[in-house]
Length: 113
Image 1: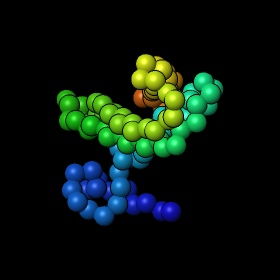
Image 2: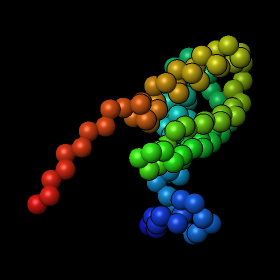
Image 3: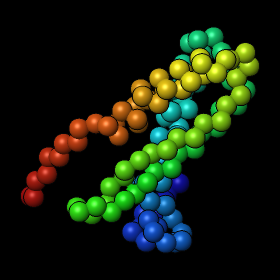
């Protein structure tokens, strides 16, 4: 699928998507996969995992920045108690690769040739 990325899709109701939406989708998917693995390793089989992510784009002195990614998880997991659920979810959030990259150092090697 080819997705059109234009600046207007960030702030207006234009057709298309934007990089922030793609980051949110990647974060939701990555977290869900990490959580499912944690559940499996702990011996649980979920019947439903539904995760949404919403990123917040804010203007600052340098332009714009993603200041937050809010994950919302709704899960149905037979025989899983709330404390274990919370612990496994927290571990998945802290350790999924997209969560980690959102906290990562960013480097740039740029050359004008």
